[in-house]
Figure: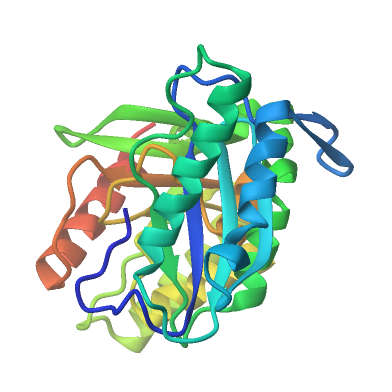
Length: 292
């Protein structure tokens, strides 16, 4: 879930909701075509779900559906609470799920569960872009087909061993075995001449088929990443949070994955934010760079 105890879920807000299919339920839709021209064909179950998504304004007039997509095993929708709600947004999602189940079981009595018990929500903060969320929802079928067309660029492995610990990996695992890797680590004590030498080496790696490895946390490291991507370079990105079961990279990172230019490495358990974790991730980056 994305429940935030500090947020009032009755307040005026835009929410990005994801609800997954129960394992025993038939698919909601079929995605065919190519990544450039995807086609989504809803099943009978998917058509009923669509009707109930569009029915949210009847549950509460203040609710407005901004965008939705019905995938084979989950649904996404952006919903706008235009005014303060009589109930929390989760109550209306619960009503929608119950009604959907009632209608489907009238037609298919053997189906016991349609959705998983919960749902994932993310509310848009001022720093978030509505356009980004809408695009993400619209492009779900495209991304599914891209993963099918380029399976090697979207591999997910949960037990990649690095320096005696196990990491999750997502993306082009071949980058891990690239022999020409360089850690992007900038120390406070680095002199200008040392920094200049590092930048030249990172530029050379980026432009000649190598891989830069880093958590890319500091502004200077982020700038190195930007320059690497501008040169169509390859990156191994270290994070401090595990990847959830259904989590996919954000749009920018997804595009890099589709090009085979990104591998994301995440710990199996969360690492706290702070300098100690920053230094630890840098040490992992250096270990990866030394591996073949």
